[in-house]
Length: 464
Image 1 (cartoon, helix red, strand yellow):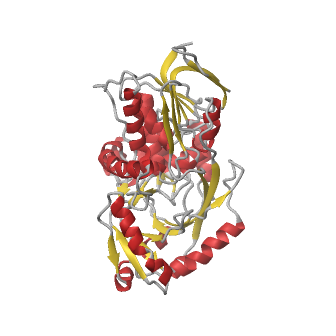
Image 2 (cartoon, helix red, strand yellow):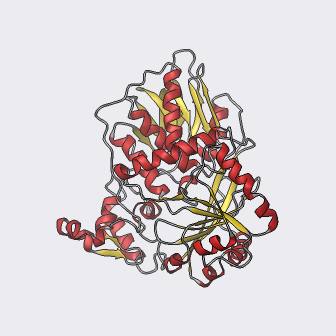
Image 3 (cartoon, helix red, strand yellow):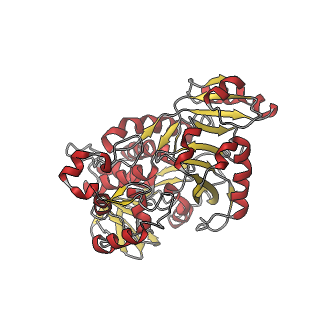
């Protein structure tokens, strides 16, 4: 069995970013995930906010890495084809008690190094967000909060890792870890075979505590926190100019109203702890709660059609910070308990892992032949293939629309099944093209998309 330098467990946004950064530094890497695609856990179902970290707890690793990650995302966006929209956020107080907490939020932002937060009067809040409901008592402007596409970030990092030499082992449920003694490699047993590695990085998200125990540790317990969201039709988009944030509580950032890079509007999330790590279904109680809160926040939004609902699980733990540790003697890096800020912090987490591995004695040398794979644009703010005459002239399939709600072409669907990290099913196709995500939810185009899938893909689950 060949021995790789590093095995990364978990191909979500954090694990994929770590794998990408490792192969950028001339290390042999295997990226392992139990699912048949990358980014199928928390990374695919979240609010897609580009966080500044203004509300993170001062002194925590999370506060430091979210701030650093915000900068790194901006630096990488153009080269990797990631849409970022600096819409800014307006944090809204709805009663006197919430208004009284605004100075504390400003002080917290300054304590973590974010100094561009600005108080807003009631009149200024309504000038920025005229569609807000009655009863606003004050607010704050956070100008550097924004929108991102979490699917593109995950896919781009995983793809960069693969095209630069990482092995990707999907559909591989972890069953056992035989911890290597002294200089012997660890042997990671999965349902698709074994992987031998000198170091193991645990970025397993909702399963990170399970992997931690397989490595002989017991540092935390994941309690999945379910967040349900409602997606409103694109016709609602002109109602919302910024991300509209609530005053956070000790357990949740609360229910927000936010645009998306795809042109929709989100309402959510809820925050309920559950025991089932697969409980990603929405509930009638959760959705009714969101509708009730949405009617207060922005009444006009509730007059628009609902396109979809979904739920995601965050890897909440008993700790108030990320569960990050490097165990040099065990040749093990724990990257657990990465909650809703994971997308924003992912690149900084990857940077931190490589730096700490170097400090632990791993030979880290930056490559000069690293290749970046640019993801196709899915955002409304960029040019899509159907609107690009040059692209259509090169390949008429980009002018043949299959999904009319989201204006997805046959060429994009073909490409999704032939990428280095290809789609394998309709769910993976959604994340790569937006097909089936629109108003009709596949009612009109489902048969045509299924036909193209049958002719074009899916290929085999990749294994390196």
